[in-house]
Picture 1 (cartoon, rainbow, N blue to C red):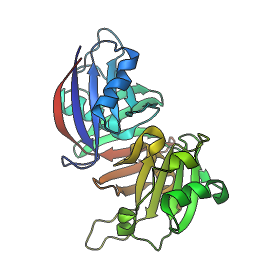
Picture 2 (cartoon, rainbow, N blue to C red):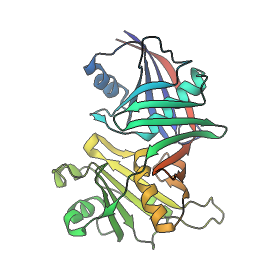
Picture 3 (cartoon, rainbow, N blue to C red):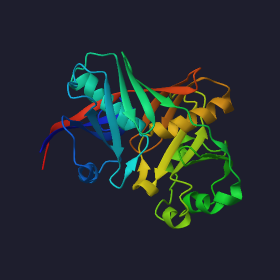
Picture 4 (cartoon, one colour):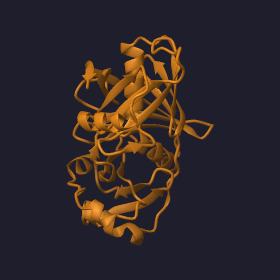
Length: 288
């Protein structure tokens, strides 16, 4: 078996920032168990598998493909950064002739549109509902101790818990905050929460670029302690911060060590466009 494989850093214009994803192009059907084995071997937060939907399809001319995402531990229903990485490989490396690609996924059809300054993902927009603090207090205290919390929301569609930190904190506080992810698996065992979003209101631009909000994302339940830049989390964050700020167009920064920028536009059809750059850092052949 020989598979073309790539690694692209998503939500960044520069290599070695943003969120790396492996991308496999499947000319033929792959044994089911190999998806997980390859993802474990790549050991990135996500490995994407792009497959042809019809025998006569090809990666240069066709505009619609199947797409699946695997962490080193399990398959996930949605991954924004690996979708962006997949589109970047097809657009920039394979030189796909189309300006818009459609991916058939566990989260329905997702579109990726090529623009001059990046790739725009058309993702579902997931509402986050008010969450009673006492039901998740142990989880939050385990993760961030006595850090002041301003709001707690829950997204049932994605099983993500959104925790907004107090407006008294700034970006540097969120960046340097030590988050205890190791014990979260013991605290949250019911399967209600699969991802923890910490978020903070943005600051007006002075010497630095202005962002509407900041975030960090943790998913030890999927084998990912901290994810560098997370498209699926922003499908929840976009809904929350648009409501809080009264804005349809938002500029976000995910404050991981690698960091990543996202440009967000809420659409009239109840979905969200999330734009980011991508840098291809590796290409090769997987053999087994």
